[in-house]
Length: 326
Image (tube, rainbow, N blue to C red; front, side):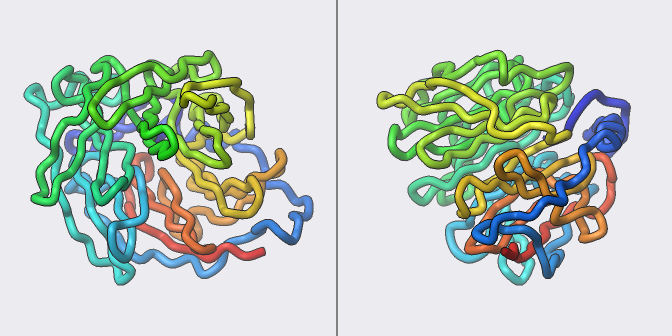
């Protein structure tokens, strides 16, 4: 979600930082070095499969594979989970309860928002940031379209990226303001999984996206422009931390392509999707393909699904697909 400090851009209840766009100006150039044949090197056939309602708060923040066909997203400002079919049809599955005070105390942003999303054992789980103690946390969507609070998280933080560690039966949730990753069990027990200094925010938002790959946890740090690799020990706790990738100005969320340790990442303010491997970066999609502040990415059999929230552009929030090519 987003990047450095806020100037005001209005969207009803939403205020977003124009400084995002400024940070994009300092983004490093794409690498021109050859990419190994086993890796992906480009993306083709970019297509906007669904466009969303900006004024209704349909700002897609996180994405997972849907229970059936298609994908599911959180709509940040409308506090919803929605499924998007291959044909672009939008099905709103449920809306998180409005916080009592309207969510104006939400740290940094000042409005309540749905963020990280996971699909586990037939249920959707979403993180919710409101700035209020009784609503900030991890919620589960039941079969009737109602949300149940699984665990509360610090109201002074901003829960953001979410992943499920199946081996240790725990959710891992990144807090972009308190600069930590929490472990959350199914019965609602919360502990600080890591609060390493590398997760810290540098004035706006720190730890952001969370992904599991190869038995390790990877976390993006928006302010630092890094992707961090954290070992998981035998008992599920955090081990050593290292930098897996850097110089990714404005990185939001990311995914692994399925080719070695290659990463596909979204750079929010500059509206780019990049491929990253062994320190080399290649830009494969830009605003000219239809990106409008992309927030996350899903990879399915060589196809990438990229939601754009238009936080800064204030134009054309959408879901875009493209085909990765070797």
